[in-house]
Image 1 (cartoon, rainbow, N blue to C red):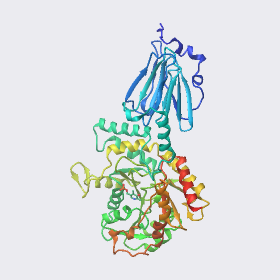
Image 2 (image 1 turned 180 degrees about the horizontal axis):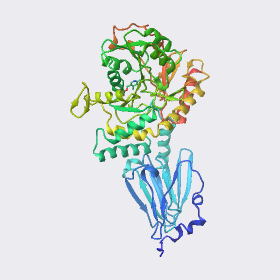
Image 3 (image 1 turned 90 degrees about the vertical axis):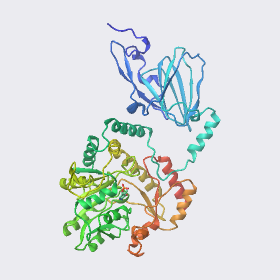
Image 4 (image 1 turned 135 degrees about the vertical axis):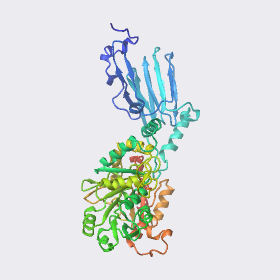
Length: 532
Ligand SMILES: *Cc1c(COP(=O)(O)O)cnc(C)c1O
């Protein structure tokens, strides 16, 4: 027995003459996106399905539909500033015209299996309705009159202000709609699980991250600083011990050593790479040296073979500070797998960032892994059995859930960073006044920071020039570790000349997964313009 379908024209059988390609005016669109509803066909009727997360890309907050439209009806005639919509023509036909900047899309909707996603910031017109037309609209936000632009001239003005010379932030962390949706979904899963500290979601992330770093174990901790300090403590490093740290890094590298009562021994960096100068490490070793901390700064791996040799010769630990190097490789091996242990931070701006603080230690030695886990959990190996004097430093389950989701996209995001770095490389390489970061042949960096060095001219002047053009920059780092007020009296100016020179000359340019090629091109043009 077959059921009679009310929409005889749109049954899969009778649709043979109007295959998917035909129901659209062209195959690809500049603004809109077409998604196929999944059709579950049966003799008891058909079921069309659109998944919010995988297909529509936003959570639906409002549903409306248009019916009984006269033939010459003109609907639409407005734009939304931030609302996203999904149109499905359930019955009949209608033409949708979309424009944004200089782009225009036009599509005749007549197949309920094709949903059209309209991004924000578009002018839309709906016309040529057939009198049987039923148009379903799914929206990402509730009704808000402030989100509408109902006058076309105002729309053009709004667009010019928003797109033409929109400031380029140094970093913008807003996720795409899809990422935000998935982040909320991940957080919801934790809320619904009822397990907010520890549990399988955390264990899964630790296993995934260890495997990503090509190492057997990962222990989630509260932040990158704790990842460094808990590892040093687990190795028994403390008072009277020395740890070699590059003079050019984020302050955490040195302070983590202080936190266990040991002494950070600063070593200057290589002028070419800004990374630990392996030739100088040798000279800094004393009988008290217990560990070396290579920092893969800016996402560029340190020359680890040289570090390995020294560590073996003197019997010291290697603790990678990989807080800026998620996914970077050295000679085809992942950062995080190159020393005795590696510390990662998941601070929001890092290449793999969570929605708060987070960190992890990645390592091969299971007993040290257990020790770190215990130290971060009040020294307990079992509940209320406190074998070590520990502290509370755990990776929140909410963060672990978000990180699991983001880890899946890390390679793709690092690839985008690489492409943007390549654009800078090509666009700026002719300028003799600046030195660009140049990866070593053994390194596959992940471009956490893209820092140029102004060797001829005034860095601060270029910074101010770019700021006046609406371009945000940063300095990594404005003051070297040894000249920080907290270290007043410990070292003198001139102690680490390369680190000092780098701090005085570098300017970090905008580079993040949210920056468009167009934006990077604008930064390049401004810098070229400045020097020419
Ligand atoms: C971010 C960072 C850290 C510290 O990480 P937190 O999570 O902020 O504690 C340590 N070292 C380097 C090189 C970093 O960039």
